[in-house]
Length: 82
Image (cartoon, rainbow, N blue to C red; front, side, top):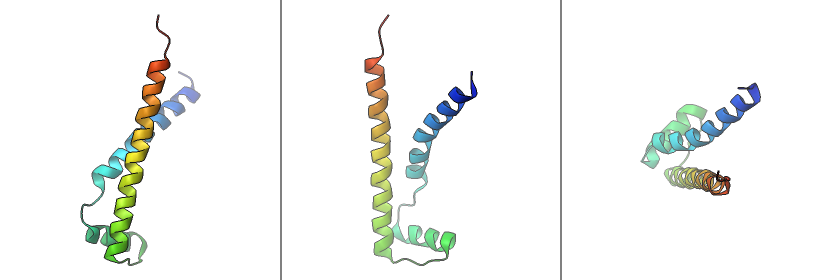
């Protein structure tokens, strides 16, 4: 396997893992999101901002997973049959 193929496979795997892990590890309450932002950056955000941010992250993660699933389905349907 060439290094180019190895890097391509790694990037494809990361494309699935990153949004999936983001959804799995995202806190369920906006207060926790605000606390994580404060700990990570030192900036405080309001609970309403944290709620909007959490919702945005969920929407983007689901959209990325849907895009990857659609792309994979299209590749499988265009695959030549022997």
